[in-house]
Amino acid sequence: MTHLHDDKIKELEEKAAQIRKDTIESVINAKSGHIAGPLDMADIFTLMYFHVLKHDPKNPDWPERDRLVLSNGHICPVQYATLAHAGYFPVSELKTLRQLGTRLQGHPHRTALPGLETTSGPLGSGLSQSVGMAIAARMDGLHSYIFCLMSDGEHQAGQTWEAVMLAGREKLWNLVAIMDRNNIQIDGMTEDILPLEPIREKYEAFNWHVIEANGHDFGEMHSAIEQAKVIHEKPTMIIAHTIAGQGVEFMERKFPWHSKAFKPEEAKQALHELRTLGGKIKSEHE
Amino acid sequence: MDLHNLIEIKAIVINPKAKLVENILELEKLEQVPTRNGYGEGLVEVGKKNPNVVVLCADLTESTRSEAFRKEFPERFVEMGVAEQNMASVASGMNAMGKIPYISSYAMFSPGRNWEQLRTTVCYNERHVIVGGAHAGVSVGPDGATHQAIEDIAITRVIANMTVVVPCDQHEARKATIVVADLEGPVYLRFAREKTPVFTTFDTPFEVGKAEILFETKGKPDVAIIACGPLVHNAILAAAELEKNGIKVRVINNHTVKPMDEKTIVQAAYDAGAFVTVEEHQINGGMGSAVAEVITRNFPVPIEFIGVQNRFGESGSPNELIKHFGMAPEHIVKAAKKAIRRK
Ligand SMILES: Cc1ncc(C[n+]2csc(CCOP(=O)(O)OP(=O)(O)O)c2C)c(N)n1
Ligand SMILES: [Mg+2]
Image 1: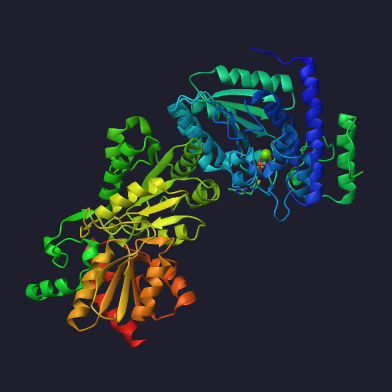
Image 2: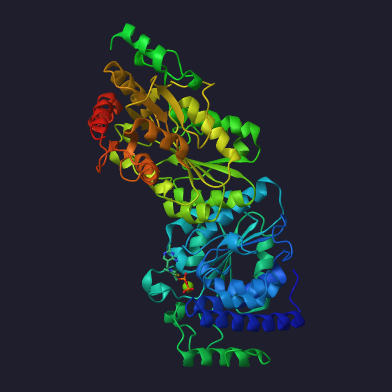
């Protein structure tokens, strides 16, 4: 199994810091949008688009690419920032998030923007689509991986489990799901609202391979993905343990920051924290 | 009805271009086959023509007539289990990879239960997925209201870009199933459970978005009957009856509810000046409502709506239910006279 070199990890950390900052700026600028999830998934998005995925921003429809399906569409600000940094469209376009005429819709719309594999927002349907892609890829002998990024909250949706069950039966080795296990949802903590645990055992019971990893540790996440790729008789679920709102201390682990309009002071504070994290990043909102 | 009289009428009024069966007015002589059978035959044919066609079914493979495709192309058939929401989105994902999925279930569950998945992951996501909804209408019969989809036309036609086709018999169902593979975007095909008269033929023209005149009196019609699905045959029987009473009628098979053949419909409004719409569906939001939307914008005429009037279905035999809910030929005759009076 290949390990990430320290240089690569450092490079990814810097990229992630930039992406966090651009994510938050775009949400502040839009005056609405989701925050906690995008921040805690910034590291995973960075790892995917800057190391894991077989993709070509100049040729987004390349048939042999890996697919990254974002099921919890509400965290799209971080996907937009990542796609922009990866070269799918200009970073300056992030300013248009949620505005009339934008390609950066409040929830991602596939045909509006290059790089998106699907339209999402209503929770619980991304895994089904990924299963469909994985089945079709297998029918055609296509060696692409289908990665499905999911939230923990959407595991309360029945459709998610319909898809989990089918993927298990089909033994979809080319399907890798990654769960943002940040423990929050809108009304509170997942375990208070409608408990998901024991989530690992649930997946195992449905005939999935399960790996748990620290979603903010590039090395750990990378090994988990490498392992998932060599499991040949089962789909894999990587439970990525994350800290909701990661990177901005006053938001961390706090469910009200799922989605919330920033007060000017909060915006300033958030950007300040993200700036000092990366060190050399400038912000136009300072 | 007096047979001699009927043949005479037929000679005058059946549109020869429609290439309908000989004995169209003699119900006892017509072959009776469910439209879902045409779906099953169409699936196999389109599967042979197009290697990208795949069929998904939610534990109703026999009764949706997807069985023949499964036998012929087992590697292109995916059993979904009782999971219609998953089925809609799995189909979306398969189309993303170039497949043309047909998803089979009862209309009550697909597009009923999985409506939002169809809207978001198929329609808004611009995926070419074909929803085959069997067992639509009250003629499902003894299973009762839980299984009688009478809202499905409304909930599909309201979604932007969705094509909605309601075939009138086995032949039309087969043709529709085959040709929609070549369309773009989402399609809903509506089928019935019960055996119904086969009154079109292999040669009857069928084109999505093109309504067909099946019955046309010489001279200017007094009323036009716009129907879809197996009730088109009741509309023809009603027209023959009206004809006997000296009322001139045009019957239109309006199989494509969306996109509607506005030209044919508006022309009929202009020519006839009064409409009866006929469908085995709630009158709220169904094919008749769609017709009303078209003509109020273009050439308003009085309309009487034959369909289910804001109720749920119930158990019974199919024919009993069609009568019970006011969709038999005699009801259409009455509605036509009323529409004419309202001119
Ligand atoms: C089917 C559906 N129901 C409700 C919503 C509204 N909604 C948006 S995000 C969310 C849940 C948040 O939990 P999670 O997905 O874990 O998001 P996080 O706060 O961790 O980003 C809900 C209920 C939705 N998008 N889809
Ligand atoms: Mg969460």
